[in-house]
Image (tube, rainbow, N blue to C red):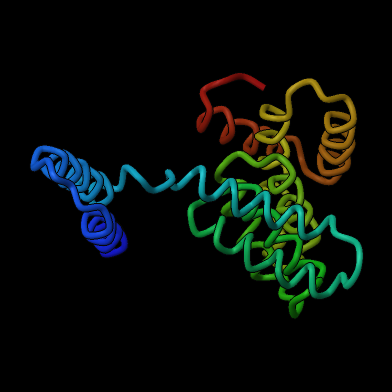
Length: 198
């Protein structure tokens, strides 16, 4: 806001307007800019900022050269996007903590970020979190919860054949281990949450 005021001051002093109405018009325009700036209308919406931060992180990951430096920089951008709730950024932070790329490996934090992204219906995060629950790595071993996450992910995955195939295979492997009552309970919980039959 101070930048706008100083620019207007420089502009009006730089040009010597003979006409008083031109100055009034410029000052009115300046007041409108100040009002818009304080109302937040000149700033990007949080979601578009988050998307821009996320895309910057993705571009950094795709750069050739020093992978560790690119990963560390990308993590900063993902963190900024995640602060605004971007599901893709939350997922990438989960991957980063799970693999230990550019940061110290921490499976509990990986599960935390996957959980946040999964709550925002990020299918890959739901899958990764299900795997963590199935294996007991970074999250408590809970096959019913893993099955529930897979069932939810299947509802969100659309018709992409490779994703559906992977989810189906994982679901079958979990259902081979669980009892019929556990499978029924997991399905029932998902149906209660989403109100749809599976």
